[in-house]
Length: 110
Image (cartoon, rainbow, N blue to C red; front, side, top):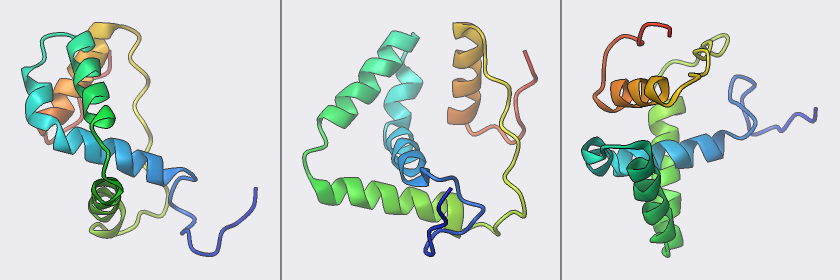
């Protein structure tokens, strides 16, 4: 793998996409909380991305999410371990709901 001089080694390679996705979820948080199904949540996010015509809005979302995720916190020596992927829609919905409601601790493993 090629080392880029501007990217710290503790950031994932495609952190800009993570930042954009996180910014979109932050921006749609209230609408996502009203969704009753995974299809509604998907449609909400699709509508959000389809309505992004202004590139300055995309850059603003990405930079604010990057600051929140990577800059405002002390960098870790190693990235945190990701939870095991949920195997059912119920598990995914539980993880998403826990995240959106801002729980302080991680949900119990499925």
